[in-house]
Image 1 (cartoon, rainbow, N blue to C red):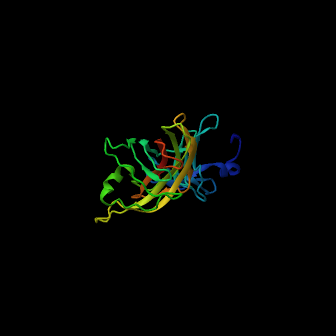
Image 2 (cartoon, one colour):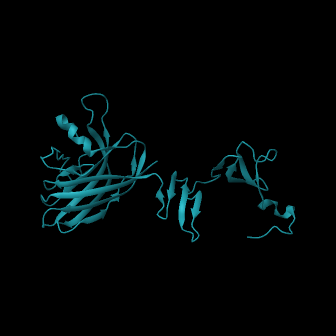
Image 3 (tube, helix red, strand yellow):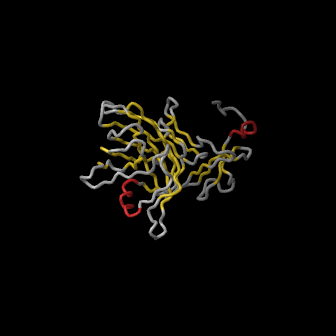
Length: 262
């Protein structure tokens, strides 16, 4: 960086910074910072505030902080409207949602709802194994009828608009025979009209999917899912499904969903 020593202001004024309010200078009102010839920067200041607003284009690093070795540890991404932190550039308001089951007894080729909180699917504690289709993907609707109450522990209702960033699952079974396990993460619209349809699901949309092969009780398979659609709106519900494609081996599963608020 050069020095202004010995140079005339008429030759260097373009490189000097000033506030736009040339009468009051820095005051209680925010004033944009300009260069010496009046070109606006992205910064504005007052005696108590500082604001950063892109003048021309949003970028993924409108504000950027790095360590001494240039590793980025903070960025304000005005393109995607998100704050990212750490060397992994993870959204600052990231959350982790978990679905898990222990000892789910499947029928081959059937999609089962996965509970939140590690439900043990046995008749001993009355937790129901709820199915939702036998096609390649789960059904996009669900009507629980007189047993809709059994569905509640399998759903997560989104509090505000959110984005799915990643989905990972770990799975094992209770037998030596290899099997193929499929995972689907869906979002649904849940009826809430104050009538007898409340709790029914419609408009199912695939958020993510993944497959583990050669799964048996001697291994724990870990799979990073493909995110197919990331946007989830406030009031929609998220459900996770598991399918034993091959046989009736009992499933032990943990699914983690990384998401952030928009």
